[in-house]
Image (cartoon, rainbow, N blue to C red; front, side):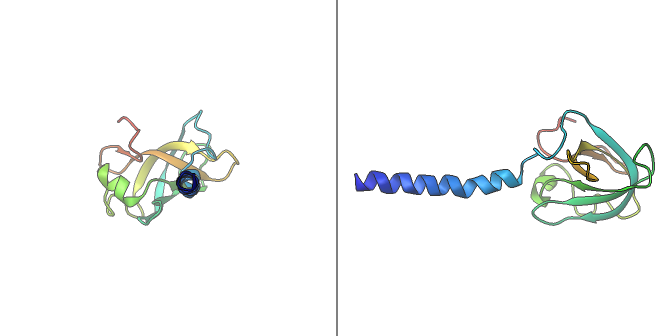
Length: 129
């Protein structure tokens, strides 16, 4: 009986350790029911863990004149999808498609990016190009 209790306690602790990681990668804070397209210029491209970020100064559409933060996956995931640290540079004109934050912040969960002179890059593995 003691061994069974110990095994159950270990399983519960392991499950509790996984929950925060799952919540961290959740897209619940984004409105995934409608896509948003941003056209603009890269202000900054941050290739760091745990997530990469693109800061875009929007130059077209209703968001014109606004600076948006575009959140994507970790560098290792993006590398597997064909990205590199030099895929984007400040000053590049890009088109970004994704889901906007549900709370109205200028934050976009990236689906794909069209860099200058390149093919569309997926931002996470589930995206079919």
